[in-house]
Image (cartoon, rainbow, N blue to C red; front, top):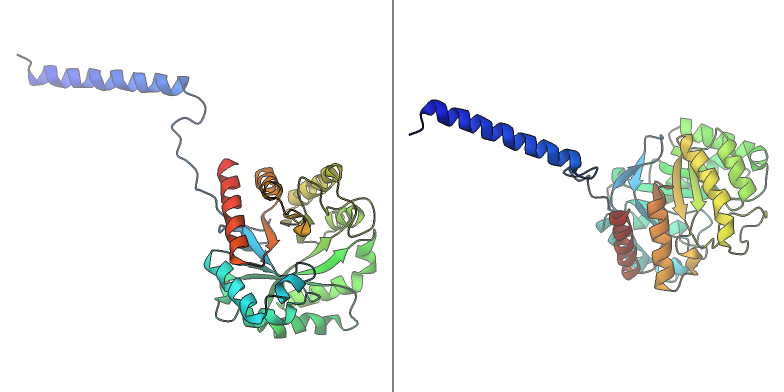
Length: 306
């Protein structure tokens, strides 16, 4: 008959033996075995935009397909419903521009949504004479105290940072006035992108990215050079350099400016961009809830596989 001392001794031997077995198994197991799984990433995550201190949803809704005429054709009520549908499905990043046909609709479209949860990005093209008035007009049209991100729009020429200094200085002043929270640029050529990366002024980069090379930046100083996958590596090099400087990186043209009518092309682009780690967030121009649903599904699948 075992005494209490025997039982305690046996229990201790069992414990030590089992601990040794578990330790041995852990040493032999593949790296990461038994580790707690990281948080699941989704399209609705509020992701940090570089070191700007701002966040936005990983997926954004664009309002400028074919200069906004695609969304404009929906009619104002349907456009507003689309913005609210996106918000209800976790999309808080809204991308617009003064030149888009939908610009005047943005204020009404975001009415009723919690402003503090939105990330509204807009753009100014050309070189308005009264640039501060133009910036202030965004606030009035959007019926908001501030624009989260304001970009100089569609830079193409090498040396644009010198040519646009007056505009850039006005952006700085507007930022000091808290009319805008961050500032940056959308580029449409490789020379312009290189200038943007080199400039300490830039906080946000809106960059064209897809593995097919559709409408991505090229050495040619034109906004719409011929598509070619070989154009992508120099763009990636600049994006990596910008990320190293703590810039916020927003991707665009994931559906090839609407060219990717085949589902496999849209899937390929989403898989590439989500797995590349090049962007903080991306924006896609939608014209229907079904298109939003599709991109959410594709993005979440790509994130799960990354």
